Length: 132
Length: 125
Image (cartoon, rainbow over all chains, first blue to last red; front, top):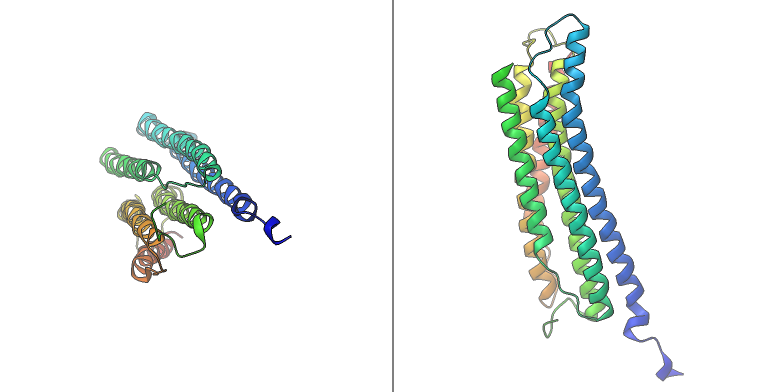
Protein backbone atom coordinates (compact mmCIF):
# COMPACT_ATOMS: atom_id res chain seq x y z
CA UNK A 1 0.00 0.00 0.00
CA UNK A 2 3.06 2.22 0.23
CA UNK A 3 2.77 3.18 -3.43
CA UNK A 4 -0.84 4.33 -2.81
CA UNK A 5 0.21 6.92 -0.22
CA UNK A 6 -1.08 10.45 -0.48
CA UNK A 7 0.25 12.46 -3.41
CA UNK A 8 1.34 16.10 -3.14
CA UNK A 9 -2.14 17.17 -4.17
CA UNK A 10 -3.90 15.09 -1.55
CA UNK A 11 -1.56 16.21 1.20
CA UNK A 12 -1.48 19.95 0.72
CA UNK A 13 -3.85 21.00 -2.04
CA UNK A 14 -6.87 21.37 0.23
CA UNK A 15 -4.83 23.37 2.75
CA UNK A 16 -3.58 25.62 -0.05
CA UNK A 17 -7.15 26.20 -1.23
CA UNK A 18 -8.25 26.98 2.33
CA UNK A 19 -5.31 29.40 2.74
CA UNK A 20 -6.36 31.01 -0.55
CA UNK A 21 -9.90 31.36 0.78
CA UNK A 22 -8.69 32.95 4.04
CA UNK A 23 -6.69 35.38 1.93
CA UNK A 24 -9.83 36.30 -0.05
CA UNK A 25 -11.62 36.95 3.26
CA UNK A 26 -8.73 39.17 4.39
CA UNK A 27 -9.07 41.17 1.15
CA UNK A 28 -12.83 41.43 1.82
CA UNK A 29 -12.29 42.70 5.38
CA UNK A 30 -9.87 45.32 4.11
CA UNK A 31 -12.34 46.37 1.43
CA UNK A 32 -15.21 46.62 3.92
CA UNK A 33 -13.03 48.68 6.28
CA UNK A 34 -12.34 51.16 3.46
CA UNK A 35 -16.02 51.36 2.50
CA UNK A 36 -17.16 51.81 6.12
CA UNK A 37 -14.59 54.53 6.66
CA UNK A 38 -15.76 56.28 3.48
CA UNK A 39 -19.34 56.14 4.71
CA UNK A 40 -18.26 57.59 8.06
CA UNK A 41 -16.30 60.41 6.43
CA UNK A 42 -19.16 61.42 4.15
CA UNK A 43 -21.90 61.21 6.79
CA UNK A 44 -20.18 62.68 9.83
CA UNK A 45 -20.08 66.19 8.39
CA UNK A 46 -23.81 65.99 7.60
CA UNK A 47 -24.41 64.93 11.21
CA UNK A 48 -22.28 67.80 12.57
CA UNK A 49 -24.09 70.28 10.31
CA UNK A 50 -27.51 69.08 11.48
CA UNK A 51 -26.34 69.24 15.09
CA UNK A 52 -25.18 72.85 14.67
CA UNK A 53 -28.46 73.86 13.01
CA UNK A 54 -30.56 72.17 15.71
CA UNK A 55 -28.60 74.14 18.32
CA UNK A 56 -29.50 77.37 16.54
CA UNK A 57 -25.93 77.89 15.26
CA UNK A 58 -24.94 78.39 11.62
CA UNK A 59 -24.53 75.09 9.81
CA UNK A 60 -21.02 75.91 8.64
CA UNK A 61 -19.51 74.83 5.32
CA UNK A 62 -21.43 72.36 3.19
CA UNK A 63 -20.67 68.67 3.44
CA UNK A 64 -20.05 68.29 -0.32
CA UNK A 65 -16.27 68.04 0.07
CA UNK A 66 -16.46 65.31 2.71
CA UNK A 67 -18.95 63.45 0.50
CA UNK A 68 -16.38 63.50 -2.31
CA UNK A 69 -13.67 62.20 0.05
CA UNK A 70 -16.06 59.46 1.18
CA UNK A 71 -16.60 58.51 -2.45
CA UNK A 72 -12.82 58.15 -2.92
CA UNK A 73 -12.76 55.73 0.04
CA UNK A 74 -15.69 53.70 -1.28
CA UNK A 75 -14.13 53.46 -4.77
CA UNK A 76 -10.84 52.35 -3.17
CA UNK A 77 -12.80 49.69 -1.24
CA UNK A 78 -14.48 48.40 -4.42
CA UNK A 79 -11.14 48.23 -6.27
CA UNK A 80 -9.64 46.35 -3.30
CA UNK A 81 -12.51 43.83 -3.37
CA UNK A 82 -12.04 43.37 -7.13
CA UNK A 83 -8.28 42.83 -6.68
CA UNK A 84 -8.98 40.23 -3.97
CA UNK A 85 -11.43 38.30 -6.17
CA UNK A 86 -9.13 38.36 -9.20
CA UNK A 87 -6.19 37.21 -7.07
CA UNK A 88 -8.34 34.45 -5.50
CA UNK A 89 -9.33 33.08 -8.93
CA UNK A 90 -5.73 33.26 -10.18
CA UNK A 91 -4.58 31.52 -7.00
CA UNK A 92 -7.08 28.68 -7.49
CA UNK A 93 -5.78 27.98 -10.97
CA UNK A 94 -2.15 28.23 -9.88
CA UNK A 95 -2.70 25.87 -6.94
CA UNK A 96 -4.27 23.29 -9.26
CA UNK A 97 -1.30 23.67 -11.62
CA UNK A 98 1.15 23.40 -8.66
CA UNK A 99 2.84 26.60 -9.85
CA UNK A 100 1.96 29.49 -7.53
CA UNK A 101 3.12 32.92 -8.65
CA UNK A 102 3.14 35.71 -6.08
CA UNK A 103 2.19 38.60 -8.39
CA UNK A 104 2.95 42.12 -7.28
CA UNK A 105 0.15 44.22 -8.76
CA UNK A 106 -2.53 43.71 -6.04
CA UNK A 107 -0.16 44.95 -3.33
CA UNK A 108 1.04 47.86 -5.46
CA UNK A 109 -2.60 48.77 -6.14
CA UNK A 110 -3.61 48.66 -2.46
CA UNK A 111 -0.56 50.67 -1.35
CA UNK A 112 -1.28 53.28 -4.04
CA UNK A 113 -4.94 53.41 -2.95
CA UNK A 114 -3.89 53.87 0.68
CA UNK A 115 -1.60 56.73 -0.34
CA UNK A 116 -4.43 58.27 -2.37
CA UNK A 117 -6.99 58.14 0.46
CA UNK A 118 -4.39 59.36 2.96
CA UNK A 119 -3.51 62.36 0.80
CA UNK A 120 -7.21 63.07 0.19
CA UNK A 121 -7.81 63.07 3.95
CA UNK A 122 -4.84 65.35 4.64
CA UNK A 123 -6.18 67.83 2.05
CA UNK A 124 -9.64 67.48 3.61
CA UNK A 125 -8.36 68.23 7.12
CA UNK A 126 -6.28 71.20 5.91
CA UNK A 127 -9.13 72.66 3.80
CA UNK A 128 -11.61 72.06 6.61
CA UNK A 129 -9.48 74.02 9.09
CA UNK A 130 -9.08 76.85 6.57
CA UNK A 131 -12.88 77.10 6.21
CA UNK A 132 -13.81 76.78 9.88
CA UNK B 1 9.09 27.76 -8.77
CA UNK B 2 12.85 28.44 -8.79
CA UNK B 3 15.11 25.54 -7.91
CA UNK B 4 15.78 25.42 -4.16
CA UNK B 5 13.14 28.05 -3.38
CA UNK B 6 11.23 28.06 -0.13
CA UNK B 7 12.12 26.90 3.32
CA UNK B 8 11.74 23.27 2.38
CA UNK B 9 8.54 21.29 2.20
CA UNK B 10 7.90 21.84 -1.48
CA UNK B 11 5.49 23.88 -3.54
CA UNK B 12 2.59 23.50 -1.11
CA UNK B 13 4.51 25.09 1.76
CA UNK B 14 5.82 27.84 -0.51
CA UNK B 15 2.27 28.63 -1.71
CA UNK B 16 0.94 28.79 1.85
CA UNK B 17 3.87 30.99 2.88
CA UNK B 18 3.06 33.49 0.12
CA UNK B 19 -0.64 33.49 1.03
CA UNK B 20 0.18 33.99 4.72
CA UNK B 21 2.48 36.87 3.70
CA UNK B 22 -0.43 38.45 1.81
CA UNK B 23 -2.74 38.13 4.81
CA UNK B 24 -0.11 39.70 7.08
CA UNK B 25 0.24 42.60 4.64
CA UNK B 26 -3.53 43.07 4.61
CA UNK B 27 -3.63 42.98 8.43
CA UNK B 28 -1.01 45.77 8.54
CA UNK B 29 -3.10 47.71 5.99
CA UNK B 30 -6.16 47.41 8.23
CA UNK B 31 -4.08 48.67 11.15
CA UNK B 32 -3.05 51.63 8.96
CA UNK B 33 -6.72 52.24 8.16
CA UNK B 34 -7.45 52.07 11.89
CA UNK B 35 -4.94 54.87 12.47
CA UNK B 36 -6.63 56.94 9.74
CA UNK B 37 -10.02 56.30 11.37
CA UNK B 38 -8.58 57.29 14.76
CA UNK B 39 -7.30 60.52 13.17
CA UNK B 40 -10.75 61.33 11.85
CA UNK B 41 -12.35 60.54 15.21
CA UNK B 42 -9.88 62.78 17.05
CA UNK B 43 -10.69 65.60 14.63
CA UNK B 44 -14.47 65.25 14.61
CA UNK B 45 -15.09 64.24 18.22
CA UNK B 46 -13.00 67.24 19.28
CA UNK B 47 -15.78 69.37 17.77
CA UNK B 48 -18.54 67.44 19.52
CA UNK B 49 -17.20 66.90 23.02
CA UNK B 50 -16.78 69.77 25.47
CA UNK B 51 -13.12 70.81 25.84
CA UNK B 52 -11.33 70.25 29.13
CA UNK B 53 -10.45 73.37 31.16
CA UNK B 54 -7.39 75.14 29.78
CA UNK B 55 -7.82 73.84 26.24
CA UNK B 56 -9.19 75.84 23.26
CA UNK B 57 -12.86 75.25 22.49
CA UNK B 58 -12.52 75.35 18.70
CA UNK B 59 -10.98 71.91 18.45
CA UNK B 60 -7.87 73.36 16.77
CA UNK B 61 -5.60 71.53 19.17
CA UNK B 62 -6.91 68.22 17.85
CA UNK B 63 -6.24 69.01 14.20
CA UNK B 64 -2.49 68.49 14.52
CA UNK B 65 -2.98 65.15 16.25
CA UNK B 66 -5.49 64.12 13.57
CA UNK B 67 -3.06 65.02 10.76
CA UNK B 68 -0.24 63.15 12.52
CA UNK B 69 -2.41 60.04 12.83
CA UNK B 70 -3.37 60.13 9.14
CA UNK B 71 0.29 60.59 8.14
CA UNK B 72 1.28 57.72 10.47
CA UNK B 73 -1.32 55.54 8.71
CA UNK B 74 0.19 56.38 5.31
CA UNK B 75 3.75 55.68 6.50
CA UNK B 76 2.60 52.41 8.05
CA UNK B 77 0.97 51.34 4.76
CA UNK B 78 4.19 52.00 2.82
CA UNK B 79 6.36 50.21 5.38
CA UNK B 80 3.95 47.26 5.27
CA UNK B 81 4.51 47.13 1.49
CA UNK B 82 8.29 47.14 2.03
CA UNK B 83 7.88 44.35 4.60
CA UNK B 84 5.84 42.33 2.08
CA UNK B 85 8.55 42.68 -0.59
CA UNK B 86 11.32 41.63 1.81
CA UNK B 87 9.31 38.66 3.03
CA UNK B 88 8.62 37.55 -0.56
CA UNK B 89 12.37 37.36 -1.14
CA UNK B 90 12.84 35.45 2.12
CA UNK B 91 10.19 32.91 1.06
CA UNK B 92 11.86 32.33 -2.29
CA UNK B 93 15.27 31.77 -0.69
CA UNK B 94 16.21 28.52 0.98
CA UNK B 95 16.27 28.80 4.76
CA UNK B 96 14.18 31.05 6.99
CA UNK B 97 15.30 34.49 8.16
CA UNK B 98 13.03 36.62 10.28
CA UNK B 99 12.96 40.42 9.85
CA UNK B 100 12.56 41.61 13.40
CA UNK B 101 13.79 45.18 12.89
CA UNK B 102 11.26 46.14 10.23
CA UNK B 103 8.38 44.62 12.19
CA UNK B 104 9.61 46.50 15.27
CA UNK B 105 9.60 49.74 13.25
CA UNK B 106 6.03 49.07 12.12
CA UNK B 107 4.92 48.36 15.67
CA UNK B 108 6.78 51.48 16.85
CA UNK B 109 4.77 53.69 14.49
CA UNK B 110 1.53 52.11 15.67
CA UNK B 111 2.61 52.61 19.30
CA UNK B 112 3.48 56.29 18.79
CA UNK B 113 0.13 56.79 17.07
CA UNK B 114 -1.64 55.11 19.98
CA UNK B 115 0.17 57.44 22.38
CA UNK B 116 -1.10 60.39 20.29
CA UNK B 117 -4.69 59.24 20.81
CA UNK B 118 -3.99 58.89 24.54
CA UNK B 119 -2.68 62.49 24.54
CA UNK B 120 -5.87 63.66 22.84
CA UNK B 121 -8.13 62.21 25.54
CA UNK B 122 -7.33 64.77 28.31
CA UNK B 123 -8.27 67.59 25.91
CA UNK B 124 -11.92 66.69 26.17
CA UNK B 125 -13.92 66.88 29.35
